[in-house]
Image (cartoon, rainbow, N blue to C red):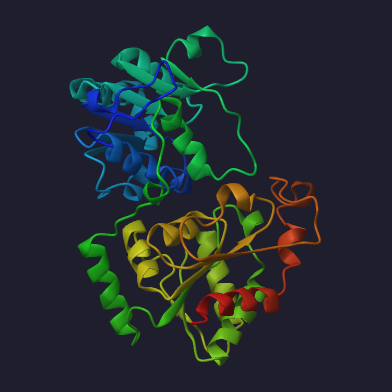
Length: 368
């Protein structure tokens, strides 16, 4: 680490001790941003003197704010497009000037988004890392000093795939540095404590279930989830349901509640992302599907039961915590990555999962 320069076989390795400021760009959805959080931890561990910033979409910023390795979280608001050409140009220029003033030595671009390449050209850092992408010509390639050439591997977790950008410049992550990080913060923790007290609950005495995803082809049927909740309740477990404030996700929670003789505690649509993290951190166990809340649970250290259908659990499964992945063994076509069988928004590999199978996974993790 710092002060211990080990032999590095890379001729173009970046000397960690010479990095003053770095920018990591991750312009994707919430879960994608969260699984990039170890990049900041590892880089800070190897270059403790560096100030490390993030650039993400505004709606995903809470995935990284309060991260102990991050100095600043800069954001791009998708709503800038609603400001008209002049308003959007002013917002973009203000962001560019803010980034330019930081005078970055290193920029790490973790996706194929062209904005990252153009920013590397404009900001002119000493080192710039980006992915090698088939079909991208010299304009893309010359935006970076280092191209990360490894192709995506369906058996390699996205945490490791993100960390490959650091490996490309000679920084080898130690196993203990690779944990995801999400800090709920004191206000969110206090708010959730009040919610729980209102329901007669406290930390560690409930199971958190987030049944939905923004992509419903990743979801278990509401009737199965309701049956799972009923079985848990019958065994004496308190269950707290959550959902995003979208109409579809809240409708799914309503459908689950309507099938229960005793409705579960519900905070559906009532929590911010930080509060969702605080709730999950207080839970004894998290149950959900391939979604950002599943990654949040892993990031705050809560054991996870994750139901997987057409998406790949090797790439996107829970990371760094005790977990059980429940996935069909009867569908050799999975993971296919298709939005439901035949594009029909319903995934047979999910609808075939039984309540008994999921319940068994829950009890394996609840066992002392």
